[in-house]
Structures are given as C-alpha cells and as structure tokens.
Length: 74
Image (tube, rainbow, N blue to C red; front, top):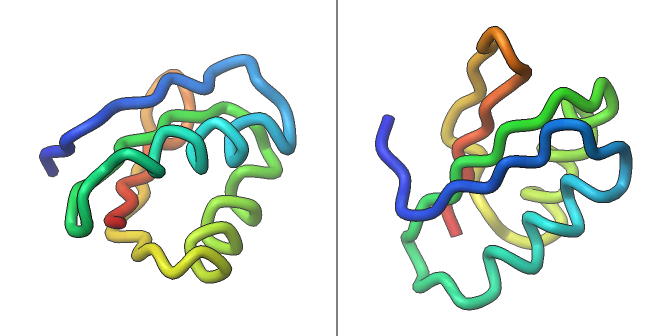
C-alpha cells in the first residue's frame, strides 16, 4: 500500500505515537494517507480509537520486523 506521508514512531510510548500522528495529519489534504509505524504495544488499541474519534479511516495494519505499520486515510 502506498502513502503520502510517513511517520516513524518507533521507540515512542503511549500517547506519543497518536499525538504525533494527529499533528502530522493536520496539514494533509482530505484523502491523503499517512503511514505510521509504531512498536508501542498500546498502539494496537490507540490508533483505531484515534481514527474513530478524529474521523479518519484505518485502511490497514501490517506487522513488520520493527513494529506495526498503520495506513490511515484522512
């Protein structure tokens, strides 16, 4: 899956991955996709909740060697 913007949140713990994602999403145009990678165990709950609360769409999530990659559409 392709994305318009990438955010490396490896090593950051809750709530930082979601806070940084929120900040990175603000300037993106509607329909743009942010790729967030996080190794925070709480992100599996926090990212879908963030998307639901902010009106974004979680397109996919995939496990990688570093952590989980989330594809979020604004």
